[in-house]
Structures are given as C-alpha cells and as structure tokens.
Amino acid sequence: MLLINTLIELGQIREAEVINQELLKANPEDPQGSLSNGRILLAEGKNDQARTELEKGLKASPNPPRAITSSVLPKTRSVSRSQPSLLGRRR
Image (tube, rainbow, N blue to C red):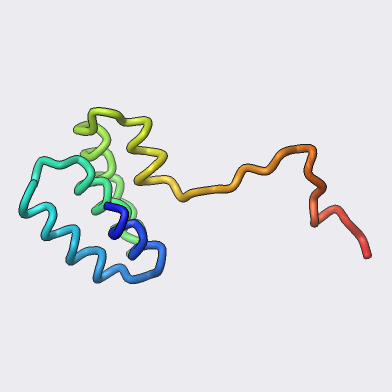
C-alpha cells in the first residue's frame, strides 16, 4: 500500500489505480484495498464514491484509528506553539 500512497502523492493516479485493482483482484476483502481506492477516488475529485469506499474500508478494518491516520489522512508536520511563526515576523 505504500507504493499506492506514494503514487497518489506524486499525482500518478492512473498507476496507483492499476496496482490497486490488481491487489483487489488477489484479495477483494482486504480493507486496505478499499481505503486505497477511496484515496484514489478523492484524488480524482470523486468525493461521493470516495466516501463510500473509505467507509467500506474503515468498517472492515481491524484497526480503524490506524487505518485513518496511515491510509486516509495526509501526513502533517506538527508545529509547537513555542516555535515562532514566519507569518508573524516583519522585515
């Protein structure tokens, strides 16, 4: 699934879709396949279809919180409140 996620992040949606479809053929009940398919659909702007796939994957996932953070939500860098904001500085 890491390859699929990387391809999505690189904008290589069609390649991610092809690989995910092959994985789903081999193991149609794998919740990660549905989660990846949901991410692909989101990247294509097909939000309603994406929601259906994501919900399907989350319901079938043995560990939904991990599934959400690692497969669905984009990775974000947390910023400490003690770090100065670049937006607040003046030259």
